[in-house]
Length: 589
Image 1 (cartoon, rainbow, N blue to C red):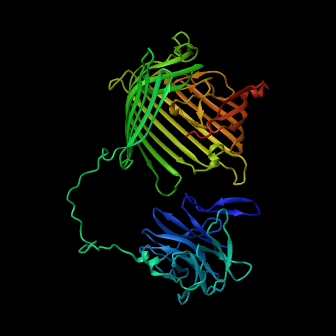
Image 2 (image 1 turned 180 degrees about the horizontal axis):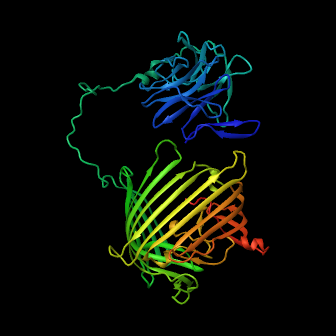
Image 3 (image 1 turned 135 degrees about the vertical axis):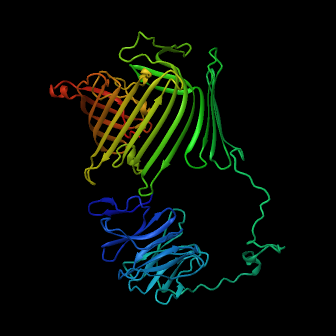
């Protein structure tokens, strides 16, 4: 969203003053103590003033209907403000607000748009841009009498910008020409000398032309007689969006998407046809409804509900069949444009088919899976049917900025999720998994090159029959992050940097504190990782903590880190730390 900044020329730094107010057109008062600006709520614009540090904000207009306000400027004596406004009449004209009384009076009333007002130093006149001649030209109005005259007569366009500090002229800009915008000076009381255009009516009568045969007896105010009506349905005006077919060896991949006329109903189909002797065909069908209220959908898959993650030094792969009904509801209270809440829920029925990949046959590309005797630390994954109810809530307060890709300088959030499975309702599993995830980016000082990032995540697995592959654990497996983000959600792999062991349980807490500095493409990070995993009915081991430093490089799709780290006991004993190369997490969600 738009907002306004103050830039310090001496310190070469900037600071946001309004925060998420959609603030535009700031202007200094003559004494340099106040700033006037336009703020927007929904489709309503109003004028506000504030101190130069962003405090003492005051609303000085009180429009409650669809209003557009542009270009407010203090008068030279600081007692009034001129601005352009389109009010209920939707006509953009100039107005003057007297700050002492709060009275607002119209200065121009031309049916064409009037805007870009510039005060003359004496405060008696205002020059402005007007479209009254169908071409933007500069006019000057006497604010006491309302008498206005045109002072430029260019054929292309010219826009008033400011009073010239070097002389008594108006600085203006011209229409862009190829790669140039010219700045010109215009006498604010110039007399227009251009003669009226003399041209034969034959060449201009198109401007007032009308139909040869006029319709009579037509009353546009007459109530329309609707002969037939019906409710809108998504099957009206179905249109094709895209289709893609790709041959992949013995398989053919296909994707197609269709939409209704309003683009509020989306139909998606994905398929993978296998022409080998295995004949392992896969498909996904999804319907999404965004007509109003929560966005919801239903998705059905056959072997395309895929879950994958590092597992016990190998790769876990689940190729599941499922049908899921889901809904999500974004919400913003309107007080902060970057403070967003998302409520979600789903009901899914899944036939889970879990395996851990051991190798791939080179001749046939067939996957070879581990058997139950090959596992070292983690339990073998279990397949079975599962009925799952999931509820989620995400609060994310982070302004959009290109720095968020590598070193976000602001933002914090909370992510909570509850998953419940009960075999008495459906399936083979009984468990409740509760996941919470919190983070914050903290800037110690507005000029600080260092940003402090903190994160803590917890997982609690309740119940007597959960899938072993979903149990929380601190492992030696390498996490997978895409573009610096967690793509696995609650199934994220947890590994403390510099700690090469395993700790299992049904409860888990992990966290990190990082000191980040650098640029959008590369950064240096010093960090402290901590965590623990334990069984609720057992004894808890000592907490783990590691520390180190790493160099991160942004490769767009991945953020790659090379670092060195180890347990703090090993640092104290002056042991040689472990070096590593892995993907980095920048934003948990």
